[in-house]
Amino acid sequence: MNASRLCIFLFLLSVSALQAQQKMFLLSGRIIDEETGKPVHARLYIESVSAKGERLYFHAATASDQGQAVTYEKRRPPKSVEIHTSLSAHPFQVELPPGNYTLTAIRGKEYLPAIKNITVSDEPLELDLELRRWIHMSEKGWFSGDTHNHRELENMRTILLAEDLNVGLPLTAWVSKFEETPRSSTKVKTPMTKGELITVDETHVVWTGNTEYEVTSIAGKRHVLGALFVLNHRTPLDLRTLPVRPIAEQARAEGALLELDKHNWPWSMMLVPVAGVDLFELTNNHIWRTDFTFSTFHSNYAFGPMAVEMNEQGGFTEQGWIDFGFKNYYALLNCGIRIMPTAGTASGVHPVPLGFGRVYVQTGEEKLNYKKWIAGLRAGNSFVTTGPMIFSIFNGNPPGSKLTLENPDKVTIVTSVRSLHPVTKIELIINGEVTAIPAAKTVILSDHTFETHFATFPDISESSWIALRVFEEAPDGRPRFAHTAPVFVNIPGLPLRAKREEVNYFIKRSEDEILRNRGVVSNDALAEFEEAGDFYRKLLPDAR
Image 1 (cartoon, one colour):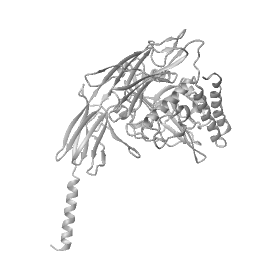
Image 2 (cartoon, helix red, strand yellow; image 1 turned 60 degrees about the horizontal axis):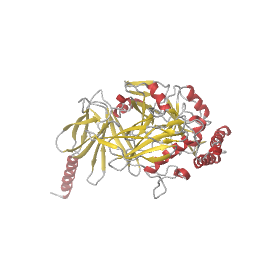
Image 3 (tube, rainbow, N blue to C red; image 1 turned 30 degrees about the vertical axis):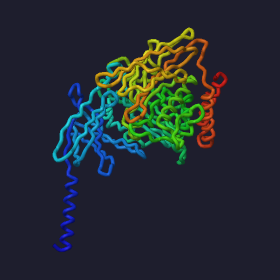
Image 4 (cartoon, one colour; image 1 turned 180 degrees about the vertical axis):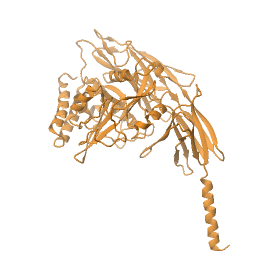
């Protein structure tokens, strides 16, 4: 064989070997409810590791003409990766090369994940992934929501059911340039025309009128203010970002709620008193299923009374970021601002599934009443969670209640917690002061989940707010928590007093923003920052 023929032969041999390496085999399957045996919507991960140690990800497709598969792929360096497929309740299929794979099916917070390790070799495979429900919150009158997400409206039905998220509030209008209004912005693929309710089934709904004001530029130059959400409004908003009061007035007229995105955007502490913000993201869009990434996001605000755990580079640790949110929230409550907790993921932008952090609202009904859900969210009949479920009663009343004591007295708090993993910390918060509650009675249930019961009887000597939080530690060591909305206790003649160091913290943030925005925004907009500073300064004479 001469040299040229030898080269051709070796080339054909290498092509044949390459084709053999790329031979694909069909994997088909179903995701079913273990109790009923019926297919269910779910989120599916298909993962493998290459010979070089690289993690590989694969998307499944629906095997039904009536089905839908919504792929999701978001990465944030260095290691935050979220790649999955949201599947409707139909069979799925995927072609895979030979190798070892891990399949993980997840359906929100109320089902145990279904995990299977398989080997694809030389023939098609069929399998079932069985999901087992470990808690049924809607039967207890609790319904979940994610109040900050960017998922496309056309895919919300499948994604909502795949996450078993009861209320979807996708942001259907979004503006980032100061000169634009949400009506004129093109950041959303299908912008809202009106706010209306889409009923998926008796326990899952979508409201279409939700707007994000997120200002990152003014007059074509980078100038970050931050984000504010208007949820549950009915008509497109045609107002510029500042001044913010006209937005708040239209929101109120339409029965909408105002939500603070993150507490450490530069303008956040102006918005709260001036716009009368209703909701605070106690679990927010930097808390993910995958690795924590945004350690340096405006970390300069973590000074004074807000000092929290930081890493060696001067940025937040994940626990530090969580605590920073808690401390900002507690400081606002101490200033007499009755803002209620909520949960948002920004799924659609960040590497996080819809509803990874979610707020549960108690309505007392097995069928979802959206109007009652929105009212309960505003009233604080709620808790937020990234994992455990917490049920607390304060003198016989739910979170968000207002109690009156004629004189200083004890309050009886009875709590139960359900969790996938053992509870590591139980903490009582009164006016921002955190007290650890000793180890409580925990029972391991037949499905290997945990139930913890405890009661506590704190002495309340002045008008106060009270809340509870619990932590569980996931197998990967990540912190997962639940936090109740506060209960407000009034004792006549003994008012709640703000803490001086917290008030000064808010004053400094207001004054810094006045200096930063002078000559950049209009005088009437700047006046709102000055108004916020005045609000906090008026608290100083009575502060402790």
